[in-house]
Image (cartoon, rainbow, N blue to C red; front, side, top):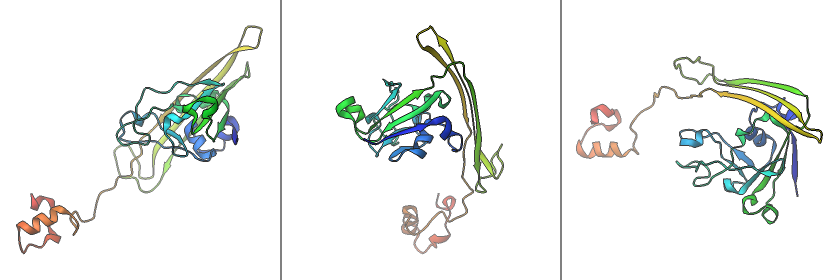
Length: 227
């Protein structure tokens, strides 16, 4: 079966992505994950999918052990509505050595939650090795409105600061993986002042005005005049 092995430390350095969902979306075919907006708790937990199958049909393992799913049921018309998935972004990328991705179904081996595929996350095992990762970015465009606290060319500021250190535990190869990660993402707004016409020939409100006021030029009406 096709298995992708992604070295996170080497791949994340040149890539503009900062989270596990973003890295897998860039690197793994048929994997999809998009940030949702105005979607209740799904604003904070990005749904993930293989080949557009349900969220609960992607099995996530950490060092070969099953990762628990979230307690969030996706609602409000978001992708995977009615399903419960796994929050990959809750696993700090600084603690990960590599990710193994099985892109075919493996229900015969793992069960029905692996119909879409399997993601196995391997944590770092090197002891007495301290690493720090800092990533910063944002969105540069001229299509940003003049909102308070924003310039006309930059918003969506993103800062990720992570640190990892493994400590020896006993004399039989044990260790403790200590990782901390701070992730900040600013708002992104592309709303502009509307300058077009409010009423056109397909609007129901225009037909009502035309029927109630015969002979009126409905193309020059405004919402205030109709009210």
